[in-house]
Image (tube, rainbow, N blue to C red; front, side, top):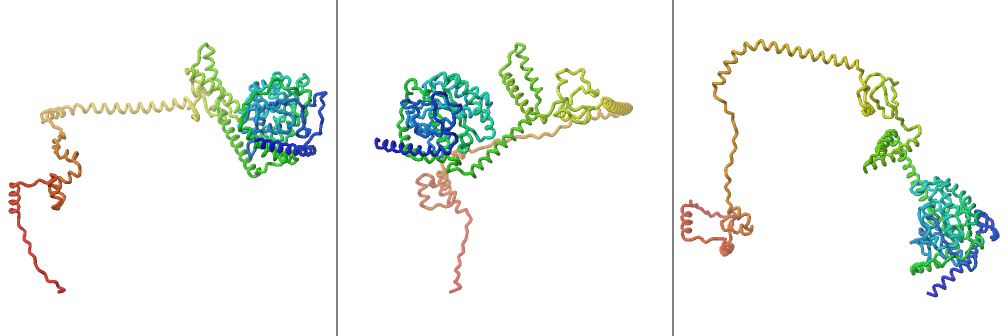
Length: 602
């Protein structure tokens, strides 16, 4: 084990020597002049990259207890992909601070990292407010340097991520509150606040640029108040080092680590003090130590080449970058966005067809119950909540459509010019032309609209003419019916006498008996013995009994003897034999004549 550590230490010295050569190369490649630190006054805001050589001591003899605070970039999201170590930028910061004792503070860890003390205070996909609500336990460990990179998720246009909204001004105010919380909990610590890394997302980039410009304005009044807070400029970070327009690639994380190291090197030395209290107690994990030892031989050996390629002017992509696949992903993302926009447009058109005034009336009716001292049921409360959400959605959809949103008038009228002013083409009762009368109709019924596509009402004069014709026709039919009834009465007297004689003859006639069909059933005689034998006697026994009775063909003598022994074949008595012989005698005899035929061939 000691030999292994000696190899690791020797490798580390070689890497640091290579870092010095890379840093000298960086002085000609990265922007910004080489600036020395002036401890007599605070540095200019914001701090910019000065190409400090790796391995430069920050403050000899003073421990650097560093707390990394932020979101997924601080967490190291996706830094374990494509052969990455999963530590984000934190391992690189430790390597560049090789001349100082570095202890990481924080309560969070990454399961993909292989650092021995990879602690931090960062949460994937969370906003400034979320971080401020949960950073307290990490601040209790009293770090003397705090690296803060937060606000990327606050600029996201997706409301599911930017839960407090994506307004840059409001986000900068939340950032100031977080800084006040840090300086109050750790007054002796130096807080480096990042002007966050940019993005290539067209929808998020404008808000990000505004937020970057607001960070120095948030820091300046606190510096004037004597707080050890500095803004650091990450806006020069190349977007070519981003994997998904938000998170850095593996080489990008290495470059972020170099940025932090360069900014730490610019802190005035009198600002850095000995940390308060003892180092946080950690549980040793041997597996983490083994992974760290392996990383000394594997990851450290390629440090110089990766850093040089990551900081070159062209900022090349990783070796596994496939432009065709990237274009395909971009086209797919564009199609997805287009589909979502079309779906949202259809949803807005559907919502805009709803009448917001009618929904508001339903809401007012439910609220009137509570205003009068009543109490809504649970179902009514749910209905009220749903109506309020629906009203907001309808109004938002109508605002989005603007002039294209349908209007809700009183619908089509007879005296109109033929156009329908209502969105649904409905008409109502009580038109001005007097075609219908609603004086005796209640108000709640009068306000109900007529069904869609209902034809216009028929004028009253036309209806009176139609009813008059109908009454005249009905009266004529009744008069004809009465005349026919009078003619029938005159012939009734003549037919009475003939009818009486027929009635007497019918009474003396014999009664007619109607024919009927009678159903009866005979009893069914069943032989239960046979049925019992068929149901309960095995098939093999039934076959033997049948053969004993002479059924089923002739039997061989051996088979007959066997059946006789088994009791299936009864031996005939003497009387039975006599009867059998008598039957044989009475049976007609058959004569068989046999002729000898000579063979023709003989």
